[in-house]
Length: 110
Length: 115
Image (cartoon, rainbow over all chains, first blue to last red; front, side, top):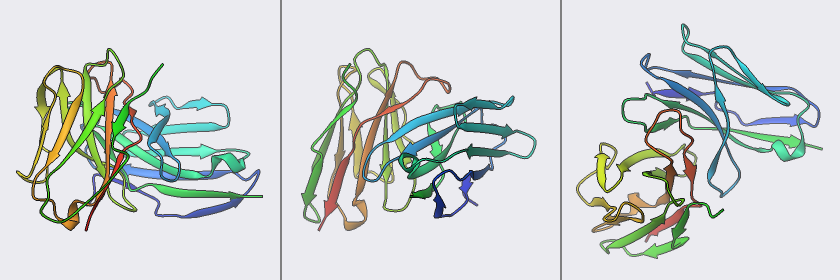
């Protein structure tokens, strides 16, 4: 079983739609959690950190459920510019390396 | 300010050759990481440096891979006797310090193709 598993996708949605990404992680010792965004043939960039209390940044909401080892990302009112691959990322803390999911490709259509 | 830079951006080599990939981290960042991303996959950890020393090299796939960071800034990833399976994008990242909460900033990557 992979350490971080994401919805395989791809997701194709119209502009203005709400889209949700789900992710599970297997190592209960994981300490920090992130969503990264990666545009085609570009480097990953941090979208947002994920906290147990849930956090929101504009149209983006991230949630963490430590008991279920589950992370989610919700994008509301999606824009064409949201088209990218969304990577669920976990840091176990002891060695600081990031463990990435495979990524979910999102295409927002006009 | 300047981000993480990597050179070359693309490298095509023949099976069996030796290659060096360079990473220049953000100035003042003490932690440096190498990842490898194959097509359709997320990046996978290779090695991380805190200062000059390799603090964790558990992700290096075999002894053909080696990385150095002699002065605690620029790092070089070295691959000997390249194989077709080594073809991937090699990403470098840096952070202020090695912490599970510090953001890692990624460079644009080196796309390695082994023919």
